Image (cartoon, rainbow, N blue to C red; front, side):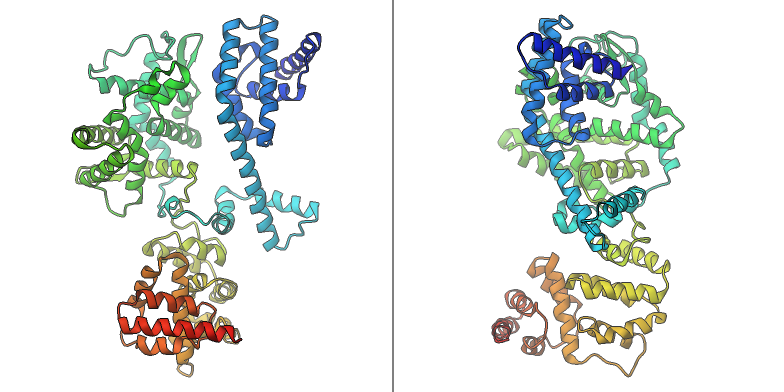
Length: 600
Protein backbone atom coordinates (compact mmCIF):
# COMPACT_ATOMS: atom_id res chain seq x y z
CA UNK A 1 0.00 0.00 0.00
CA UNK A 2 2.85 2.34 0.91
CA UNK A 3 4.66 1.59 -2.34
CA UNK A 4 1.44 2.44 -4.18
CA UNK A 5 1.03 5.96 -2.77
CA UNK A 6 4.74 6.71 -3.14
CA UNK A 7 4.83 5.55 -6.75
CA UNK A 8 1.58 7.30 -7.59
CA UNK A 9 2.84 10.56 -6.09
CA UNK A 10 6.19 10.37 -7.90
CA UNK A 11 4.39 9.88 -11.22
CA UNK A 12 1.95 12.68 -10.45
CA UNK A 13 4.76 15.10 -9.54
CA UNK A 14 6.58 14.33 -12.80
CA UNK A 15 3.39 14.86 -14.83
CA UNK A 16 2.49 18.07 -12.99
CA UNK A 17 6.02 19.46 -13.47
CA UNK A 18 5.93 18.70 -17.20
CA UNK A 19 2.56 20.46 -17.54
CA UNK A 20 4.04 23.54 -15.86
CA UNK A 21 7.24 23.66 -17.91
CA UNK A 22 9.41 22.46 -15.04
CA UNK A 23 11.58 19.45 -14.44
CA UNK A 24 11.14 17.04 -11.55
CA UNK A 25 13.91 14.95 -10.07
CA UNK A 26 11.79 11.81 -9.80
CA UNK A 27 14.55 9.82 -8.11
CA UNK A 28 15.03 12.52 -5.48
CA UNK A 29 11.28 12.85 -4.87
CA UNK A 30 10.99 9.07 -4.50
CA UNK A 31 13.78 8.99 -1.93
CA UNK A 32 12.11 11.72 0.10
CA UNK A 33 8.70 10.04 0.01
CA UNK A 34 10.07 6.60 0.90
CA UNK A 35 11.92 8.08 3.86
CA UNK A 36 8.74 9.91 4.90
CA UNK A 37 6.82 6.63 4.67
CA UNK A 38 9.47 5.10 6.93
CA UNK A 39 8.58 7.53 9.75
CA UNK A 40 4.87 6.82 9.48
CA UNK A 41 3.65 9.23 6.79
CA UNK A 42 0.83 7.73 4.70
CA UNK A 43 0.47 10.42 2.07
CA UNK A 44 2.50 13.35 0.73
CA UNK A 45 -0.08 15.83 2.01
CA UNK A 46 0.57 14.68 5.59
CA UNK A 47 4.19 15.86 5.58
CA UNK A 48 4.70 18.71 8.04
CA UNK A 49 7.75 20.92 8.66
CA UNK A 50 9.01 18.77 11.55
CA UNK A 51 8.54 15.63 9.45
CA UNK A 52 10.55 17.17 6.66
CA UNK A 53 13.34 18.09 9.06
CA UNK A 54 13.42 14.54 10.44
CA UNK A 55 13.58 13.10 6.93
CA UNK A 56 16.45 15.35 5.88
CA UNK A 57 18.58 15.58 9.01
CA UNK A 58 18.03 12.14 10.55
CA UNK A 59 16.70 9.60 8.06
CA UNK A 60 18.46 10.68 4.86
CA UNK A 61 22.07 10.62 6.19
CA UNK A 62 21.49 7.26 7.88
CA UNK A 63 19.90 5.49 4.91
CA UNK A 64 21.18 7.17 1.75
CA UNK A 65 24.76 7.25 0.49
CA UNK A 66 25.37 10.83 -0.59
CA UNK A 67 27.95 13.60 -0.58
CA UNK A 68 27.65 17.26 0.42
CA UNK A 69 27.48 18.32 -3.25
CA UNK A 70 24.25 16.31 -3.57
CA UNK A 71 22.46 18.52 -1.01
CA UNK A 72 21.24 21.26 -3.44
CA UNK A 73 19.60 18.65 -5.70
CA UNK A 74 17.76 17.04 -2.79
CA UNK A 75 16.55 20.40 -1.50
CA UNK A 76 15.41 21.25 -5.05
CA UNK A 77 13.41 18.01 -5.04
CA UNK A 78 11.83 19.15 -1.76
CA UNK A 79 10.88 22.47 -3.37
CA UNK A 80 9.36 20.69 -6.35
CA UNK A 81 7.32 18.45 -4.07
CA UNK A 82 6.02 21.45 -2.11
CA UNK A 83 5.17 23.28 -5.35
CA UNK A 84 3.22 20.23 -6.53
CA UNK A 85 1.34 19.83 -3.23
CA UNK A 86 0.37 23.51 -3.19
CA UNK A 87 -0.41 23.59 -6.91
CA UNK A 88 -2.76 20.62 -6.62
CA UNK A 89 -4.35 22.00 -3.44
CA UNK A 90 -3.27 19.03 -1.35
CA UNK A 91 -1.92 21.56 1.13
CA UNK A 92 -2.80 25.18 1.73
CA UNK A 93 -0.63 28.22 1.25
CA UNK A 94 0.31 28.46 4.94
CA UNK A 95 1.50 24.85 5.10
CA UNK A 96 3.46 25.38 1.89
CA UNK A 97 5.10 28.50 3.34
CA UNK A 98 6.00 26.61 6.52
CA UNK A 99 7.56 23.81 4.48
CA UNK A 100 9.56 26.23 2.32
CA UNK A 101 10.71 28.04 5.45
CA UNK A 102 11.86 24.73 6.93
CA UNK A 103 13.76 23.87 3.72
CA UNK A 104 15.66 27.14 4.02
CA UNK A 105 16.31 26.73 7.75
CA UNK A 106 17.37 23.12 7.61
CA UNK A 107 19.94 23.46 4.82
CA UNK A 108 23.02 23.99 7.07
CA UNK A 109 22.08 21.10 9.37
CA UNK A 110 21.24 18.87 6.40
CA UNK A 111 24.56 19.61 4.72
CA UNK A 112 26.45 19.00 7.97
CA UNK A 113 24.64 15.68 8.56
CA UNK A 114 25.36 14.48 5.03
CA UNK A 115 29.01 15.50 5.31
CA UNK A 116 29.33 13.67 8.65
CA UNK A 117 27.73 10.53 7.23
CA UNK A 118 29.95 10.71 4.13
CA UNK A 119 33.03 11.07 6.33
CA UNK A 120 31.88 8.15 8.49
CA UNK A 121 31.39 5.99 5.39
CA UNK A 122 34.92 6.82 4.24
CA UNK A 123 36.36 6.15 7.67
CA UNK A 124 34.51 2.83 7.84
CA UNK A 125 35.91 1.82 4.45
CA UNK A 126 39.44 2.81 5.55
CA UNK A 127 39.02 0.81 8.75
CA UNK A 128 37.81 -2.30 6.89
CA UNK A 129 40.59 -2.09 4.33
CA UNK A 130 43.24 -1.83 7.06
CA UNK A 131 41.82 -4.83 8.90
CA UNK A 132 41.59 -6.89 5.71
CA UNK A 133 45.14 -6.04 4.68
CA UNK A 134 46.50 -7.19 8.02
CA UNK A 135 44.50 -10.42 7.78
CA UNK A 136 45.85 -11.21 4.34
CA UNK A 137 42.71 -10.49 2.29
CA UNK A 138 43.36 -9.66 -1.37
CA UNK A 139 41.67 -6.26 -1.75
CA UNK A 140 41.53 -6.69 -5.53
CA UNK A 141 39.42 -9.83 -5.13
CA UNK A 142 35.80 -8.66 -4.81
CA UNK A 143 34.55 -12.05 -3.69
CA UNK A 144 37.21 -12.29 -0.95
CA UNK A 145 36.35 -8.79 0.27
CA UNK A 146 32.60 -9.55 0.35
CA UNK A 147 33.25 -12.83 2.15
CA UNK A 148 35.35 -11.07 4.82
CA UNK A 149 32.72 -8.35 5.35
CA UNK A 150 29.94 -10.94 5.59
CA UNK A 151 31.92 -12.89 8.20
CA UNK A 152 32.70 -9.71 10.17
CA UNK A 153 29.01 -8.75 10.24
CA UNK A 154 28.09 -12.09 11.82
CA UNK A 155 30.14 -11.19 14.89
CA UNK A 156 28.50 -9.68 17.96
CA UNK A 157 28.81 -5.94 18.57
CA UNK A 158 31.36 -6.59 21.34
CA UNK A 159 33.46 -8.85 19.09
CA UNK A 160 33.40 -6.29 16.27
CA UNK A 161 34.41 -3.52 18.67
CA UNK A 162 37.27 -5.56 20.12
CA UNK A 163 38.70 -6.33 16.67
CA UNK A 164 38.31 -2.76 15.45
CA UNK A 165 39.57 -0.95 18.58
CA UNK A 166 43.33 -1.06 17.80
CA UNK A 167 42.67 0.28 14.27
CA UNK A 168 40.35 3.01 15.51
CA UNK A 169 42.97 4.09 18.03
CA UNK A 170 45.64 4.19 15.34
CA UNK A 171 43.42 6.06 12.86
CA UNK A 172 42.09 8.62 15.30
CA UNK A 173 44.76 8.68 18.00
CA UNK A 174 42.03 8.18 20.60
CA UNK A 175 41.41 11.47 22.37
CA UNK A 176 42.30 10.91 26.02
CA UNK A 177 39.37 13.10 26.98
CA UNK A 178 37.05 10.68 25.16
CA UNK A 179 38.24 7.59 27.02
CA UNK A 180 36.66 6.56 30.32
CA UNK A 181 37.71 3.86 32.78
CA UNK A 182 36.25 0.36 32.46
CA UNK A 183 33.20 -0.60 34.48
CA UNK A 184 31.27 -3.73 35.37
CA UNK A 185 27.66 -4.09 34.30
CA UNK A 186 24.90 -5.86 36.18
CA UNK A 187 23.04 -8.66 34.34
CA UNK A 188 20.61 -7.39 31.71
CA UNK A 189 17.55 -8.84 33.47
CA UNK A 190 18.41 -6.97 36.68
CA UNK A 191 18.97 -3.75 34.77
CA UNK A 192 15.66 -4.07 32.94
CA UNK A 193 13.78 -4.73 36.19
CA UNK A 194 15.44 -1.67 37.73
CA UNK A 195 14.47 0.43 34.69
CA UNK A 196 10.82 -0.63 34.91
CA UNK A 197 10.76 0.09 38.65
CA UNK A 198 12.67 3.38 38.45
CA UNK A 199 11.30 6.75 39.46
CA UNK A 200 12.02 7.99 35.93
CA UNK A 201 9.73 5.33 34.45
CA UNK A 202 7.10 6.11 37.09
CA UNK A 203 7.22 9.86 36.40
CA UNK A 204 6.99 9.24 32.66
CA UNK A 205 4.06 6.84 32.99
CA UNK A 206 2.16 9.13 35.35
CA UNK A 207 2.50 12.16 33.12
CA UNK A 208 1.73 10.21 29.94
CA UNK A 209 -1.45 8.74 31.43
CA UNK A 210 -2.48 12.12 32.84
CA UNK A 211 -2.03 13.73 29.43
CA UNK A 212 -3.79 11.01 27.41
CA UNK A 213 -6.86 12.48 25.72
CA UNK A 214 -6.06 16.07 26.70
CA UNK A 215 -5.81 18.94 24.24
CA UNK A 216 -2.37 20.19 23.29
CA UNK A 217 -1.90 23.87 22.55
CA UNK A 218 -0.12 25.47 19.61
CA UNK A 219 3.00 25.68 21.77
CA UNK A 220 3.14 21.88 21.84
CA UNK A 221 2.24 21.68 25.54
CA UNK A 222 -0.97 20.64 27.35
CA UNK A 223 -3.51 23.39 27.58
CA UNK A 224 -3.58 22.75 31.34
CA UNK A 225 -1.09 21.46 33.86
CA UNK A 226 -1.49 18.79 36.55
CA UNK A 227 -3.04 19.88 39.84
CA UNK A 228 -0.17 18.18 41.63
CA UNK A 229 2.28 20.62 40.04
CA UNK A 230 3.74 23.07 42.54
CA UNK A 231 3.50 26.85 42.15
CA UNK A 232 7.24 27.44 41.85
CA UNK A 233 8.75 28.41 38.50
CA UNK A 234 11.24 25.56 38.71
CA UNK A 235 8.37 23.07 39.14
CA UNK A 236 6.70 24.37 35.98
CA UNK A 237 10.00 24.31 34.15
CA UNK A 238 10.60 20.74 35.31
CA UNK A 239 7.16 19.80 34.00
CA UNK A 240 7.92 21.31 30.60
CA UNK A 241 11.29 19.58 30.53
CA UNK A 242 9.79 16.15 31.27
CA UNK A 243 6.89 16.78 28.89
CA UNK A 244 9.14 17.53 25.94
CA UNK A 245 11.37 14.56 26.83
CA UNK A 246 8.29 12.30 26.75
CA UNK A 247 7.52 13.47 23.25
CA UNK A 248 11.07 12.96 21.99
CA UNK A 249 11.12 9.47 23.53
CA UNK A 250 7.64 8.75 22.11
CA UNK A 251 6.25 8.05 25.58
CA UNK A 252 3.58 10.53 24.48
CA UNK A 253 2.40 11.11 20.92
CA UNK A 254 0.40 14.15 19.84
CA UNK A 255 -1.99 13.72 16.93
CA UNK A 256 -4.51 16.31 15.71
CA UNK A 257 -3.96 18.39 18.81
CA UNK A 258 -4.64 15.54 21.24
CA UNK A 259 -2.16 13.56 23.33
CA UNK A 260 -2.09 9.78 23.63
CA UNK A 261 0.33 7.30 25.13
CA UNK A 262 2.94 6.20 22.63
CA UNK A 263 5.05 3.17 21.76
CA UNK A 264 7.80 4.32 24.11
CA UNK A 265 5.56 3.73 27.12
CA UNK A 266 4.61 0.28 25.84
CA UNK A 267 8.29 -0.56 25.41
CA UNK A 268 9.09 0.74 28.89
CA UNK A 269 6.56 -1.68 30.39
CA UNK A 270 7.24 -4.68 28.19
CA UNK A 271 8.72 -7.97 29.38
CA UNK A 272 11.28 -7.64 26.60
CA UNK A 273 14.38 -6.55 28.50
CA UNK A 274 16.13 -5.05 25.46
CA UNK A 275 13.09 -2.96 24.57
CA UNK A 276 12.56 -1.77 28.14
CA UNK A 277 16.17 -0.72 28.54
CA UNK A 278 16.23 1.01 25.14
CA UNK A 279 13.13 3.02 26.07
CA UNK A 280 14.50 3.92 29.50
CA UNK A 281 17.89 5.10 28.26
CA UNK A 282 16.26 7.15 25.50
CA UNK A 283 14.18 8.87 28.14
CA UNK A 284 17.27 9.40 30.32
CA UNK A 285 19.13 10.88 27.36
CA UNK A 286 16.27 13.29 26.74
CA UNK A 287 15.83 14.52 30.32
CA UNK A 288 19.59 14.91 30.78
CA UNK A 289 20.57 16.48 27.46
CA UNK A 290 17.40 18.05 26.04
CA UNK A 291 17.87 21.80 25.56
CA UNK A 292 14.38 23.10 26.23
CA UNK A 293 15.05 26.47 24.68
CA UNK A 294 16.52 25.01 21.51
CA UNK A 295 13.40 22.88 21.31
CA UNK A 296 11.23 25.92 21.69
CA UNK A 297 13.26 27.78 19.09
CA UNK A 298 12.79 25.02 16.54
CA UNK A 299 9.05 24.80 17.03
CA UNK A 300 7.98 28.35 17.67
CA UNK A 301 9.03 31.95 17.39
CA UNK A 302 12.48 33.39 17.81
CA UNK A 303 11.75 35.06 21.14
CA UNK A 304 13.37 32.20 23.09
CA UNK A 305 16.62 32.91 21.29
CA UNK A 306 16.97 35.83 23.65
CA UNK A 307 16.00 33.79 26.72
CA UNK A 308 17.94 34.90 29.79
CA UNK A 309 20.08 32.01 31.02
CA UNK A 310 19.34 31.07 34.63
CA UNK A 311 21.37 29.02 37.09
CA UNK A 312 18.86 26.19 36.59
CA UNK A 313 19.52 26.25 32.83
CA UNK A 314 23.25 26.27 33.40
CA UNK A 315 23.17 23.36 35.86
CA UNK A 316 21.09 21.32 33.42
CA UNK A 317 23.57 22.20 30.71
CA UNK A 318 26.28 20.74 32.94
CA UNK A 319 24.37 17.55 33.86
CA UNK A 320 26.16 15.33 31.31
CA UNK A 321 29.48 16.51 32.75
CA UNK A 322 28.30 15.82 36.31
CA UNK A 323 27.32 12.26 35.38
CA UNK A 324 30.61 11.76 33.54
CA UNK A 325 32.52 12.95 36.62
CA UNK A 326 30.73 10.46 38.88
CA UNK A 327 31.20 7.68 36.30
CA UNK A 328 34.97 8.22 36.18
CA UNK A 329 35.58 8.30 39.93
CA UNK A 330 36.84 5.23 41.78
CA UNK A 331 35.35 6.61 45.00
CA UNK A 332 31.93 8.23 45.52
CA UNK A 333 31.85 11.90 44.55
CA UNK A 334 30.86 14.25 47.35
CA UNK A 335 28.40 17.09 46.93
CA UNK A 336 31.18 19.58 47.73
CA UNK A 337 33.35 18.08 44.99
CA UNK A 338 30.54 18.22 42.44
CA UNK A 339 29.66 21.77 43.43
CA UNK A 340 33.26 22.89 43.06
CA UNK A 341 33.54 21.33 39.60
CA UNK A 342 30.16 22.74 38.63
CA UNK A 343 31.04 26.26 39.78
CA UNK A 344 34.29 26.21 37.80
CA UNK A 345 32.36 25.07 34.74
CA UNK A 346 29.62 27.67 35.08
CA UNK A 347 31.85 30.64 35.78
CA UNK A 348 34.23 29.68 33.00
CA UNK A 349 31.76 28.61 30.32
CA UNK A 350 29.37 31.52 30.79
CA UNK A 351 31.89 34.21 31.81
CA UNK A 352 29.99 35.23 34.93
CA UNK A 353 31.81 37.65 37.22
CA UNK A 354 31.29 39.99 40.15
CA UNK A 355 27.95 40.10 41.91
CA UNK A 356 26.39 37.86 39.27
CA UNK A 357 29.00 35.21 40.08
CA UNK A 358 28.09 35.31 43.79
CA UNK A 359 24.40 35.02 42.96
CA UNK A 360 25.07 32.16 40.60
CA UNK A 361 27.04 30.28 43.24
CA UNK A 362 24.07 30.41 45.61
CA UNK A 363 21.48 29.65 42.96
CA UNK A 364 23.70 26.99 41.37
CA UNK A 365 24.05 25.20 44.71
CA UNK A 366 20.29 25.06 45.09
CA UNK A 367 19.81 23.97 41.47
CA UNK A 368 22.45 21.25 41.84
CA UNK A 369 20.70 19.86 44.92
CA UNK A 370 17.44 19.66 42.97
CA UNK A 371 19.10 17.86 40.07
CA UNK A 372 20.90 15.40 42.35
CA UNK A 373 17.61 14.68 44.08
CA UNK A 374 15.93 14.06 40.72
CA UNK A 375 18.74 11.76 39.56
CA UNK A 376 18.47 9.79 42.80
CA UNK A 377 14.68 9.54 42.53
CA UNK A 378 14.96 8.49 38.89
CA UNK A 379 17.20 5.56 39.84
CA UNK A 380 20.42 6.97 38.36
CA UNK A 381 22.31 8.04 41.50
CA UNK A 382 22.66 6.53 44.93
CA UNK A 383 24.11 8.03 48.09
CA UNK A 384 24.02 11.33 49.92
CA UNK A 385 26.01 14.60 50.05
CA UNK A 386 28.93 12.69 51.62
CA UNK A 387 29.25 10.53 48.55
CA UNK A 388 27.23 9.94 45.38
CA UNK A 389 27.76 6.95 43.12
CA UNK A 390 25.88 5.68 40.10
CA UNK A 391 23.43 2.87 40.64
CA UNK A 392 24.00 -0.26 38.50
CA UNK A 393 21.25 1.05 36.21
CA UNK A 394 22.93 4.47 36.21
CA UNK A 395 26.29 2.95 35.25
CA UNK A 396 24.67 1.14 32.34
CA UNK A 397 22.68 4.19 31.25
CA UNK A 398 25.55 6.69 31.42
CA UNK A 399 27.80 4.26 29.53
CA UNK A 400 25.18 4.01 26.78
CA UNK A 401 25.09 7.81 26.52
CA UNK A 402 28.89 7.97 26.40
CA UNK A 403 29.07 5.35 23.67
CA UNK A 404 26.48 7.25 21.64
CA UNK A 405 28.59 10.38 22.09
CA UNK A 406 31.70 8.70 20.67
CA UNK A 407 33.48 7.79 23.90
CA UNK A 408 35.59 4.68 24.33
CA UNK A 409 33.95 3.04 27.34
CA UNK A 410 35.44 -0.42 28.02
CA UNK A 411 34.00 -3.16 30.20
CA UNK A 412 35.97 -5.19 32.69
CA UNK A 413 36.53 -8.66 31.25
CA UNK A 414 35.86 -7.86 27.61
CA UNK A 415 39.51 -8.40 26.63
CA UNK A 416 39.58 -12.01 27.82
CA UNK A 417 38.58 -13.46 24.46
CA UNK A 418 40.63 -11.07 22.35
CA UNK A 419 43.95 -11.59 20.63
CA UNK A 420 47.23 -10.56 22.24
CA UNK A 421 47.15 -7.41 20.08
CA UNK A 422 43.68 -6.55 21.35
CA UNK A 423 44.65 -7.26 24.94
CA UNK A 424 47.69 -4.98 24.84
CA UNK A 425 45.77 -2.19 23.07
CA UNK A 426 42.91 -2.48 25.55
CA UNK A 427 45.13 -2.40 28.61
CA UNK A 428 46.05 1.19 27.81
CA UNK A 429 42.48 2.15 28.74
CA UNK A 430 42.43 0.36 32.10
CA UNK A 431 43.41 1.34 35.60
CA UNK A 432 46.03 -0.84 37.29
CA UNK A 433 43.55 -2.94 39.27
CA UNK A 434 41.30 -3.66 36.30
CA UNK A 435 44.34 -4.25 34.07
CA UNK A 436 45.55 -6.97 36.46
CA UNK A 437 42.15 -8.62 36.31
CA UNK A 438 42.07 -8.45 32.52
CA UNK A 439 45.53 -10.06 32.31
CA UNK A 440 44.51 -12.86 34.67
CA UNK A 441 41.35 -13.57 32.68
CA UNK A 442 43.22 -13.52 29.37
CA UNK A 443 45.95 -15.88 30.60
CA UNK A 444 43.42 -18.21 32.20
CA UNK A 445 41.90 -18.87 28.80
CA UNK A 446 45.17 -19.90 27.10
CA UNK A 447 47.91 -22.45 27.37
CA UNK A 448 51.13 -20.78 28.58
CA UNK A 449 52.99 -21.77 25.42
CA UNK A 450 50.32 -20.19 23.19
CA UNK A 451 50.12 -17.06 25.35
CA UNK A 452 53.90 -16.61 25.29
CA UNK A 453 54.09 -17.08 21.52
CA UNK A 454 51.31 -14.56 20.86
CA UNK A 455 52.83 -11.98 23.20
CA UNK A 456 56.31 -12.31 21.70
CA UNK A 457 54.85 -11.79 18.23
CA UNK A 458 53.21 -8.59 19.44
CA UNK A 459 56.47 -7.44 21.00
CA UNK A 460 58.48 -8.16 17.86
CA UNK A 461 56.09 -6.17 15.65
CA UNK A 462 55.19 -3.38 18.06
CA UNK A 463 56.48 -0.07 19.34
CA UNK A 464 58.36 0.34 22.63
CA UNK A 465 55.08 1.11 24.38
CA UNK A 466 53.55 -2.08 23.02
CA UNK A 467 56.59 -4.09 24.13
CA UNK A 468 56.39 -2.57 27.61
CA UNK A 469 52.79 -3.66 28.10
CA UNK A 470 53.21 -7.04 26.44
CA UNK A 471 56.29 -7.71 28.60
CA UNK A 472 54.19 -7.07 31.72
CA UNK A 473 51.76 -9.74 30.58
CA UNK A 474 54.58 -12.08 29.51
CA UNK A 475 56.11 -11.83 32.98
CA UNK A 476 52.97 -13.53 34.35
CA UNK A 477 53.03 -16.44 31.92
CA UNK A 478 53.77 -19.66 33.77
CA UNK A 479 56.97 -21.70 33.52
CA UNK A 480 55.36 -23.89 30.84
CA UNK A 481 56.00 -21.04 28.40
CA UNK A 482 59.78 -21.38 28.72
CA UNK A 483 60.43 -23.16 25.35
CA UNK A 484 58.78 -20.36 23.42
CA UNK A 485 60.41 -17.60 25.47
CA UNK A 486 63.79 -19.21 24.93
CA UNK A 487 63.23 -18.97 21.17
CA UNK A 488 63.04 -15.21 21.66
CA UNK A 489 66.76 -15.15 22.47
CA UNK A 490 67.41 -15.27 18.71
CA UNK A 491 65.54 -11.99 18.04
CA UNK A 492 67.39 -8.71 18.66
CA UNK A 493 64.29 -6.93 19.96
CA UNK A 494 63.10 -9.81 22.10
CA UNK A 495 66.40 -11.06 23.50
CA UNK A 496 66.68 -8.60 26.43
CA UNK A 497 63.10 -9.34 27.55
CA UNK A 498 63.55 -13.10 27.06
CA UNK A 499 66.72 -13.05 29.14
CA UNK A 500 64.95 -11.12 31.90
CA UNK A 501 62.02 -13.56 31.89
CA UNK A 502 64.26 -16.64 32.01
CA UNK A 503 66.31 -15.17 34.86
CA UNK A 504 63.16 -14.30 36.82
CA UNK A 505 61.80 -17.82 36.24
CA UNK A 506 64.78 -19.56 37.77
CA UNK A 507 67.39 -19.97 35.03
CA UNK A 508 70.51 -19.05 36.98
CA UNK A 509 72.73 -19.67 33.96
CA UNK A 510 71.31 -16.70 32.10
CA UNK A 511 71.65 -13.10 33.17
CA UNK A 512 71.11 -10.01 31.00
CA UNK A 513 74.35 -8.13 30.36
CA UNK A 514 74.58 -4.48 31.51
CA UNK A 515 74.11 -3.44 27.86
CA UNK A 516 70.94 -5.52 27.57
CA UNK A 517 69.60 -4.18 30.84
CA UNK A 518 70.30 -0.67 29.61
CA UNK A 519 68.51 -1.47 26.34
CA UNK A 520 65.39 -2.43 28.32
CA UNK A 521 65.61 0.85 30.26
CA UNK A 522 65.78 2.83 27.00
CA UNK A 523 62.89 0.84 25.55
CA UNK A 524 60.84 1.43 28.70
CA UNK A 525 61.39 5.20 28.68
CA UNK A 526 60.72 5.34 24.93
CA UNK A 527 57.44 3.54 25.56
CA UNK A 528 56.45 6.02 28.27
CA UNK A 529 57.26 8.91 25.94
CA UNK A 530 54.68 7.60 23.45
CA UNK A 531 51.82 8.55 25.77
CA UNK A 532 53.20 10.75 28.57
CA UNK A 533 54.71 14.19 28.66
CA UNK A 534 58.53 13.94 28.91
CA UNK A 535 58.58 15.17 32.52
CA UNK A 536 55.98 12.59 33.55
CA UNK A 537 57.75 9.83 31.62
CA UNK A 538 61.05 10.52 33.35
CA UNK A 539 59.40 10.73 36.77
CA UNK A 540 57.76 7.32 36.22
CA UNK A 541 60.96 5.75 34.89
CA UNK A 542 63.02 6.97 37.84
CA UNK A 543 60.41 5.80 40.34
CA UNK A 544 60.49 2.30 38.82
CA UNK A 545 64.28 2.10 38.53
CA UNK A 546 66.11 -0.10 41.09
CA UNK A 547 67.21 1.87 44.13
CA UNK A 548 70.84 0.90 43.59
CA UNK A 549 70.84 1.97 39.93
CA UNK A 550 73.65 4.38 39.09
CA UNK A 551 71.86 6.73 36.68
CA UNK A 552 74.99 8.76 36.09
CA UNK A 553 76.93 5.71 34.92
CA UNK A 554 73.95 4.51 32.88
CA UNK A 555 73.71 7.85 31.07
CA UNK A 556 77.42 7.79 30.25
CA UNK A 557 76.96 4.45 28.49
CA UNK A 558 73.49 4.95 27.08
CA UNK A 559 74.59 6.67 23.89
CA UNK A 560 76.24 3.41 22.81
CA UNK A 561 73.00 1.39 23.08
CA UNK A 562 71.74 0.07 19.74
CA UNK A 563 68.23 1.50 20.04
CA UNK A 564 66.68 4.01 17.60
CA UNK A 565 65.10 6.08 20.39
CA UNK A 566 68.28 6.67 22.41
CA UNK A 567 68.59 10.38 21.43
CA UNK A 568 64.97 11.14 22.42
CA UNK A 569 65.35 9.30 25.74
CA UNK A 570 68.57 11.17 26.53
CA UNK A 571 66.93 14.47 25.57
CA UNK A 572 64.12 13.77 28.04
CA UNK A 573 66.59 12.88 30.76
CA UNK A 574 68.62 16.01 30.00
CA UNK A 575 65.54 18.23 30.26
CA UNK A 576 63.84 16.63 33.26
CA UNK A 577 66.23 14.64 35.46
CA UNK A 578 66.24 16.30 38.91
CA UNK A 579 70.01 15.81 39.36
CA UNK A 580 71.67 18.62 37.41
CA UNK A 581 74.88 16.70 36.87
CA UNK A 582 73.00 13.70 35.45
CA UNK A 583 70.90 16.00 33.28
CA UNK A 584 74.04 17.67 31.91
CA UNK A 585 75.64 14.29 31.20
CA UNK A 586 72.45 13.20 29.39
CA UNK A 587 72.56 16.23 27.11
CA UNK A 588 76.21 15.47 26.21
CA UNK A 589 75.33 11.82 25.60
CA UNK A 590 72.41 12.80 23.35
CA UNK A 591 74.83 14.73 21.15
CA UNK A 592 77.17 11.70 20.99
CA UNK A 593 74.27 9.39 20.12
CA UNK A 594 73.18 11.56 17.20
CA UNK A 595 76.73 11.91 15.95
CA UNK A 596 77.21 8.14 16.14
CA UNK A 597 73.98 7.51 14.24
CA UNK A 598 74.93 10.06 11.58
CA UNK A 599 78.24 8.27 11.00
CA UNK A 600 76.53 5.03 10.27
